[in-house]
Image (cartoon, rainbow, N blue to C red; front, side, top):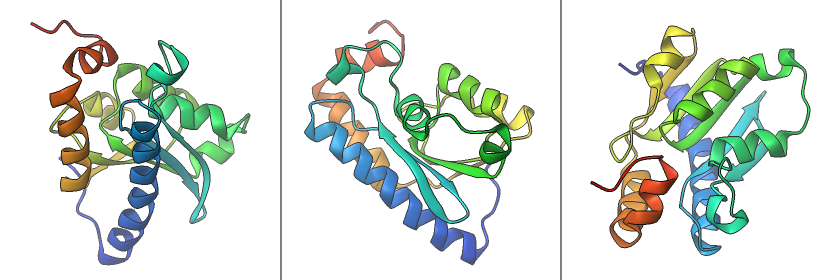
Length: 160
């Protein structure tokens, strides 16, 4: 279950999730899957990214991976102080990267269209908060409805 958020954190969460949503919309405008992500340290966005699998013909450029790549090389101590805001629940690959780099908190826009490895993150002492954002849900649901084969490819599943 997601942690209950105090009102101060709640405002902050929605500000930074809005940044992740902008990234998702940028990805959609480029012809890609609308999933976005930002990494925040000390109340500042230090990296941003969006799903670029379609645009770059990539097998790994999920939003979280693109965001980490855009952060550049950072010391583990930096990532430990970061929160990742992602519009969608992170998959196994992205959850592994979050764990590998020691990101201590992940705020998820939604997990209804896809629920990734949230249990793995929690079991690895990563704080996981789910906002249940209707904007995140609707943005991806509309995409999936029109592009279901690309979506199933993105999450590594068969369409059946």
